Image (cartoon, rainbow, N blue to C red; front, side, top):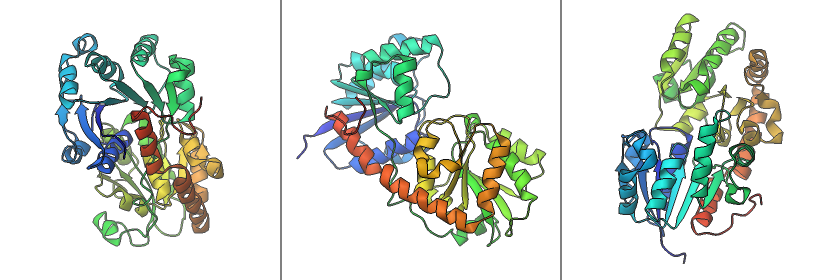
Length: 377
């Protein structure tokens, strides 16, 4: 039997998104196991995802740190860490410097940090802070090879400290299946609708207005069944997306139902999953969509091409190329057989490369100080 281990996850927020989903998966998988998990959030709220997580972890602390002061003396965070009595602290994007400093002051034996994605080259001060945090961190995890290279080459983290652990999804939950007739009715969709859409945070970096604008052009073309657009999610960019919908006269044809409590059913509703983001890390929603057998069309940002793999490289388009987006969407919307072919390839690649069990096993090895197989030297 493995020795018992106390793990504390530190995140900025647990409201919604790919990183939050992975932390929730860890809590669910390790409940009742040799790993006793606690969570500390720094946003001052429990969060939508946190509501379910806090019921299954040992301790759940909600903090709101004082800006500035917490960069020098994160006293409240040190106290919360000590209360959870961790063998390992696992930090996530948005909580690195403060979390690493607090964990060091709390004398935690092992500190892990996962970088889930960078939107742009960081200012010199941010890189300096990250290098300081990296010196206090036992292992820095990148979720993709591209991000691994960025952390070493641009940020300046010692390559001996950086390993790659790709994200994963539960391919036994996210499975292909028919679209729910009940969900179609609840959204007011025709039974024979051809559904284009996405699932993700409504934030500026996701650039969903691009998808709305593309849909406005595609809707006027003959695709056989009526073409509708459905985007699941919530966030600060909702007013912008709604304004784009109104400006283009699409209010009766676009659905923005907010978060779904059953994302697998959301993916199964989609004939085509489109991701028009300006930036991504290693997208969990893309992997979930692939696992559900969705036909993907994505921008070539972050690790999207890496997630799809070489078999689906035709579905990756240049960021900001509106004409390429339209061409890619037209091709798959025009052919049910092509959508089925690409969806089948997506499902196969998700099963082979994006397993949640593989990801969790790799993290447990890191927590226990063991090497991760297949990690770059």
